[in-house]
Image 1 (cartoon, one colour):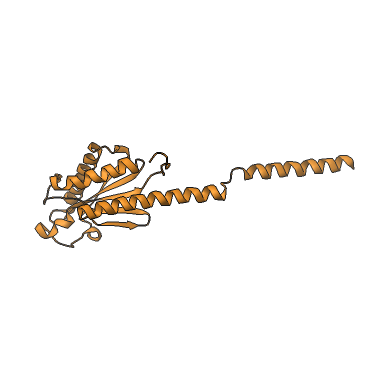
Image 2 (cartoon, rainbow, N blue to C red):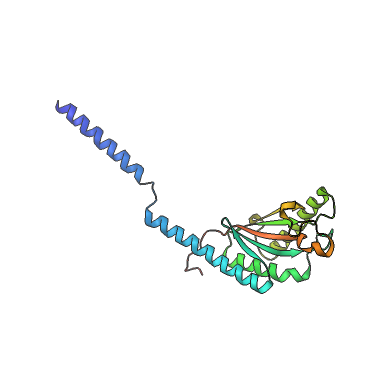
Length: 191
């Protein structure tokens, strides 16, 4: 009977050890709250910096489901994917903010076209526009690994001015910059 009691005691201690050992992998509430607070502070800093860019360059900056979108990254002539000199200051400032404060950020460069050409042509044109801006941002010091280029061409749900072409369709011939992820928070000592 004594061996049975010791066996039960040993089994109980073993189960307790396994149970407590499993708990060591859980994140403590205060560590979780601290990490969430740091992520929120990073998002607020990014939003503040993008708001400053928005005011300086008359750009529309919006936030959707944790993503920040800069709607006036660049505009293009009809059928062209050449970056204009007037759009470079905004892109330079954007690159500087990302480089200095959010070096781990993931950004999607979205290219668009007005409906003047065929759907296939406009898709390719939007891609060339997105790649032109991506390449410019890389030349401004951002990492190519953190930039993605996609095209929406003339997708009707993405047109700013539905059906507009020529001068009226200028807002449709654009590239938008979307900050999909602001990056890991930097320690305040590094700032």
